Image 1: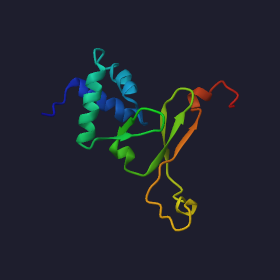
Image 2: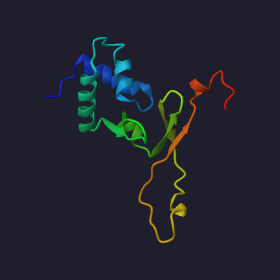
Image 3: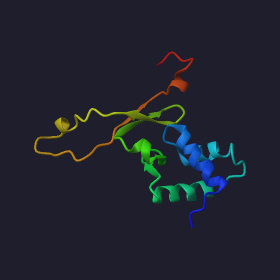
Image 4: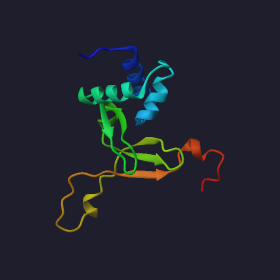
Length: 130
């Protein structure tokens, strides 16, 4: 049974409004603004259900726990940026698709993942940019 509870709606809304891939902990923190008693187990169960029904996709990022984003945000091929300071992930729109030319002779590229690392705008504010 797929009930639309206040908890599930707060989780769904948090993921949709964030505009970037979120970790389960980030989902919990955002959704608790609407449902203060929300627990992490409910977040994980709901994320699993939303992945199974095709609403969300998991975004595996190297050296980090999976992030989650709405399928509509992920429907266009894109990459991700991870802030080295705060750990938040962001979508990087578009792709140069020039990777076949980087493969060794005779190899055929069937896919790729690109993750950019650096400092996000929030963490970079007030610093010298280094």
